[in-house]
Length: 206
Image 1 (tube, rainbow, N blue to C red):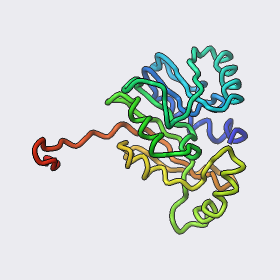
Image 2: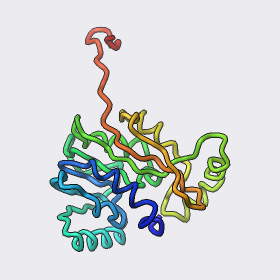
Image 3: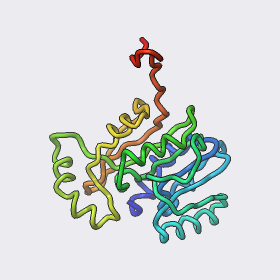
């Protein structure tokens, strides 16, 4: 995807990051492509990246761009931050490679403030019944081994909804690339409001 970054991914990434605000967390910073597109509304930047090579590249990019960055070695499933610590969390091609999607999403939601937003840019599985979807299923094991743990066929939209995010603002698209990771999910996913439960019966009050 780094080869496609300048021409194909950049406009999508830049459009997504334009809505970032306040105290920002990027989980899975990678080589730091997101740092180029941070708007003035972002007041502080923290990032988590488990790969030491990627951390070195990202730190160098941050210095070049003049971005003051707190870069931490960590994983999405166990974020070392307090509850409700961030206004915006960015998930840039992250959830395809985490070991436990549900645990990672629970952590992303935990560190977001109640009025916060998750900014999503993720590889996803193509629609059922499509040739691309079948290809993604067939190549999952070898691709996972070759591509730093990436699963090309995860149903991320469903996982986000199950984790308590509002997915109504998410859209799907396809990068014009001859590859099985061309399908993507992008958009803003705020924390979904909790239903109000009856204190004595546990039933949802309607």
